[in-house]
Amino acid sequence: MKIKNCYGCGGCAAVCPSGAITLRGEVEIISEKCIKCGRCELLCPAGLITIKK
Ligand code: SF4
Ligand code: SF4
Image (tube, rainbow, N blue to C red; front, side, top):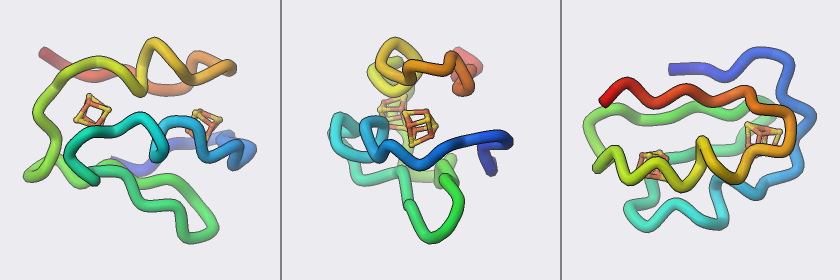
């Protein structure tokens, strides 16, 4: 899942405990690695991430 309109603060990747977020120009969440902890969703200052539980 790619995150649109991200300004690249990197916070979501820093808090992800499973290394599921890559930051290469744009943020992408690798769903196979995501454990749905919700940390990235809580942290994103722009509210860009929605994790489907
Ligand atoms: S919800 Fe998924 S992508 Fe987000 S911080 Fe948790 S494991 Fe990482
Ligand atoms: S926390 Fe939000 S704005 Fe920051 S890199 Fe992640 S998706 Fe982009």
